[in-house]
Image: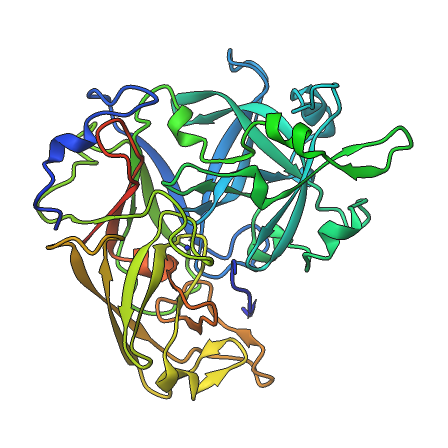
Length: 408
């Protein structure tokens, strides 16, 4: 079975007591039964995914939960913000029942979002997100125009190429970055004029539109201060999907406790650089020797980093070393605080390709690596293999987003 090449996107605190994680500005973190969301890593709905983390979500039109749709194969992305669903994944009648985000003159809002791999154009709606037995209040749901014949504004198309989630085996994406939200200034906003043409919102109109790219998980009724991604070790390429778990909440049950074995990294609460605005910290790399912004990014499906030695053996789908290459880097909290640096090791391998060299043969590849030309390091989904990775949201007690990780 062949998988087409595709890369998504383009992302010990000994001085801090564990009590800093026991409060959340948006809700309670008191002891609750653990809420576990299954994660599947692999090829997705059409076999085109590689190293991609998928979850199922349920979307409702009302808080009573009486009119809902469950959507499978949603990319779990710690490197982006907000819930975006392909229009084709939902019945048209259901979408019509979801309230619209509107301007002050009651005009429906549309948005052009850009990822490292392209753009998506969306209608903006409100909905209720349900995960297992817990629900949010109203959150923004972006319904993506994913039909080839969809009408899209020219200046959005210019951000291209079109980012079709189906190319990653997905029906959509849930962005759960711990920085919580990305300002609307990062996207293009539109309404339609009397003739049905898209026109850009004025600065005044844009100012009153709610934040569209926002992590929905802090809006959960409980277990809303963060989450843990737990993935078993993966040591070789396989076409069998790997199963993991997303555990909602941090320090709310026996399954999501921060321990003395958890390496904690404090991320910047604002833009760390021109290329990294998503709960970033620093990565120190060698060859070329540099200290650059970094993020733990489950929505990027490979290790993405700069290495001149490996780049000399690059191929059409990434790094292609003739023998396994051990890449070592160090991560630091954004402020380089003492006792907050940790070594991370990845083993980069050459993967089987077809004779033309433009496809790879496996849906789960722990050693898949790419060169990053953007002067940043993305610890993509292979970093999560064999680890519990903690994502801790800002709160009244800790204003910065915090990452944590510990190996199995």
